[in-house]
Amino acid sequence: MYLRMVEATVKKKGEYLLGEVYAEKILTSLEKVPGCIFAGLLHSRDQEFKYISLTLWQSEKDAEVYEASGSYQKNLESVQHLLEEKSEWKIQLSDDNMVEYKEIPIEPSVKLYPTAENPEPLPDEITNQSNILRILSLKVKEGFKEEFRKIYNTEILPELKKIPGCRYAFLLDNSENDGEMISLSIWQDLETVEKYEKHGMFKQFLEQANHTLGGLYQWKMVLKSRSKSKSAVTSQDIGISKFELITGKKFV
Image 1 (tube, rainbow, N blue to C red):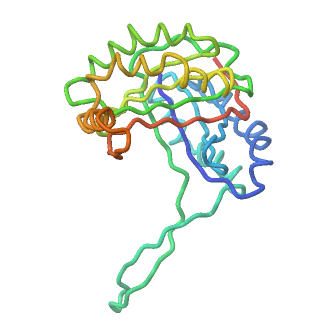
Image 2 (cartoon, helix red, strand yellow; image 1 turned 120 degrees about the vertical axis):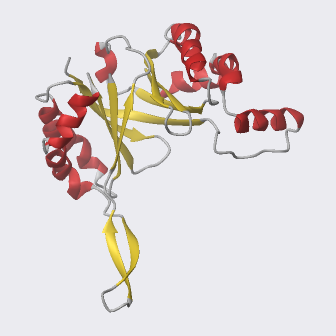
Image 3 (spheres, helix red, strand yellow; image 1 turned 90 degrees about the horizontal axis):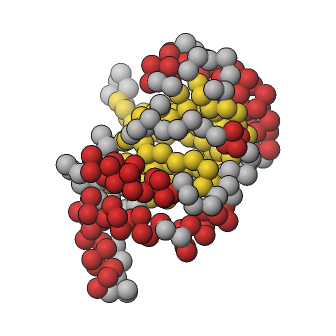
């Protein structure tokens, strides 16, 4: 199974129409696309105007065929008027050797991740609008990917699924990007996620896999244990982001 995410920034007041357009046009379109298991529109809990269109696919080929067919571009065009028209500037020399500045629109970013193992089928409750998607990003040491996967799938995942409010969870393998592994979990509501993080087993799960995590993260933890007044930010820090499901549909 493959997960595909399209990240975009929405114009102010555009968020009021985005959910409606997504449900009427994009979900209706994706329902007819072979290999699409689920599609949902998610709103960031940390960035007011950041949204993600998340789709799950039976195979990488299915996702690639969808994009190559032009259907993705057509779906993008249906919401383009609601997206922020951010751009970047490209500096170049003109034909007469004069410096010129050319404005280049920034398209929504598209990311495709394979699952580390074949997860269980999606539960029907996944389409409830109260669902919270939690994305946990970790950087694993070189040579420890398989050990991390084993710990996650045999020790952490079974216990994670037992926690009240956790509806679904699986591991994404993005190890080609500096050893990144992503734990994606879907929760009943924000309250259950926060309870898990503050008073639940999250700290214990990290300790189980701690020895497989990157050296910079290990150094930061040592520094933190020696002095509460000292802190550091590294390229291997654990990243946590949360998104609320606005609308979604399960197709398979």
